[in-house]
Image (cartoon, rainbow, N blue to C red; front, side, top):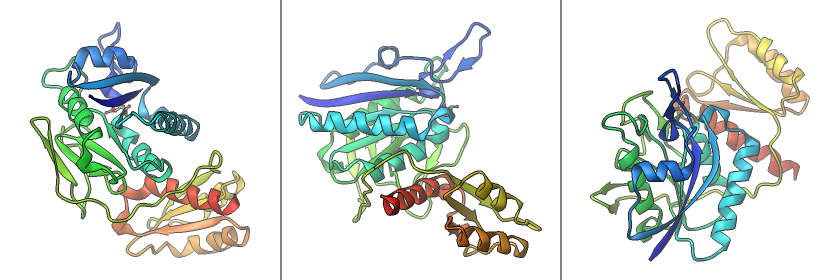
Length: 288
Ligand code: ASP
């Protein structure tokens, strides 16, 4: 029998109504979530409730703890795959972080839901079930970390949350999905041909994201430097152009040794938060 570890971290998929009738994100344990949704009975699913948080409470410290727990499970040898349930608001960051840092060839599936298990027609049930099947399917081996949402499998590197409430909440613009899950069967149509891996050495240093906009000046760049940023992601326009009044502060930052990465408009949105992770990896690797 295949063995999958279900690591739960909170989010809407683990939300419950509080005493005032409002949904509180991330309060369910993994055991409660599994009991609500039911799990496939032909797969041995080990439940490990690691966090119970809304995903905006995710930090690099917690990501490191998650990564280390995943590596420990994979080192056991008999684990076929891992499912991480997560709030959707920062799901793509966690997925990409795991893709960059976990060396295993086995699949990590990150999933969540737009609706709580208590809501009619919740997507929690199908997303969780599909994720468990995808995590241990041989055809996904070597694809790195993937996101399973609304019966589709997305590469962690390109996936982005594109809708705040619709069950089709994720998309990988320009790349598409790797495959689908239909009736507990996994169909893979494409796979990444190259993976990046950065062994993690420590909590990454501070990196800030600063947007360029009409009339922007260097105020935020200088503030980031004063706050001790080791890197700045500049979200520019077009191919990364920034407003002219920002330039002097950017040049000063670079002279002080702050790594400045300009981001093309083409990659805006999807990659804003992801670029933080890529940049901090570059910085911590070059500092190591
Ligand atoms: N606020 C929730 C979160 O923890 C949203 C969700 O899970 O869909 O990200």
